[in-house]
Image (cartoon, rainbow, N blue to C red; front, side, top):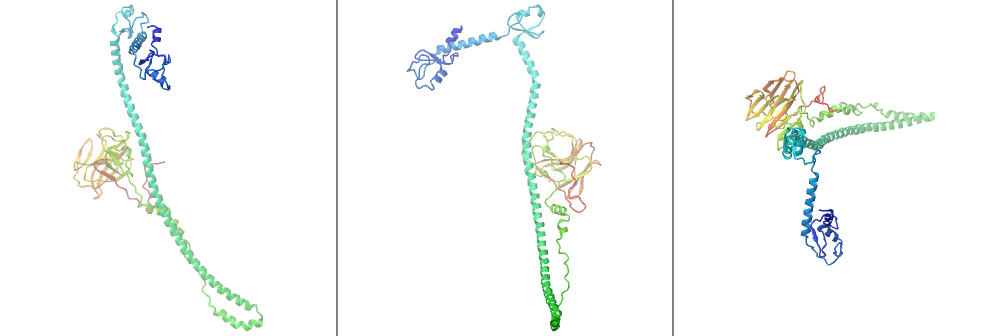
Length: 474
């Protein structure tokens, strides 16, 4: 079609090829949407070209013009596609073949040319299909890598959200604990100051009474002395006349014993300030506890729920937790937050005769994802039996019955792990260890709760008020 024909197929409103053309009673055609937009703000509907009035409210579609426009658009697209198809730079022919030797497209003339003598050719569509498959295969490792990156990204996003939750919960618990401590200290301060005020009032009142008694005695003595000295200043005759009466008055006034300073009249400052912090700490023992093993929530499998003080654990519904490297994913295991490689350590665990539980120590390097094969020593309650286990060694069924509290004792220097019945103080089982890294206390359980029992805190003279910490928070 010529450019003039294309112009005849254009809407006089949008100047583009007709889209859904409609015809008016005046025989002029427009795009349906263009005409509706033209009429939108017009009170009287007229033809945009001839301005003829009294037109139909719903003009009919111009099917002939519509078919012509669609045919024109299709022909134009085909022509553009043909013009855009690459041609051979040497022979200006369409590239229908692919030379496998040169790995490049070629035309039929190229196939018979000297440059491609004895070369192998394939149709372009076949070669393209083969190369598509090759590219798809080469993309597979990239797609797998993309999946890994996307998974790790989701883990990081989940970890960031969990960090906020952890920070909020931890801050809340810190504030609650310090609130209790402040309340205790405020009450203790109030009680001590009240006792100090009471002693001050009692001793001040006693001293005031002594002062008042002495004031009365001083008044009497002063009056006697004044009257007598007045007689002494009188004339000799008058003095002698009144001498006997004056002497009798002085002698009849008995002299009191010399007043004595009162012992213990002062505030007993030493009682209030002496070892003040130690005495307060001694009174705090009832509200302060120390647990030798603190469970690490970042290692807990998703079904395990830890208490707020991180000393007990129970099984529950699976939680949505980050897939961090420290966390176990195949066994309901949680580690203590601190590992040991020297010295002697012990902790007491409250267990029971129901469910399934295991407790002991494992190596720091143990694989935390997937199956645990070796690297741990444990005492467990499985299938209603108490078992000592340390793969690859065979399990040992123990004769002990009805354990309620178990003491775990780890002697790193001697390489020995022992389990005791805390209620009878009898040895249950012991392992001989061989390790070159830190060992972490751990608990594994199903359908049960376990609790690490607190240790006794001593505030006696000569003993440290707080068990020595192995961790630094600075």
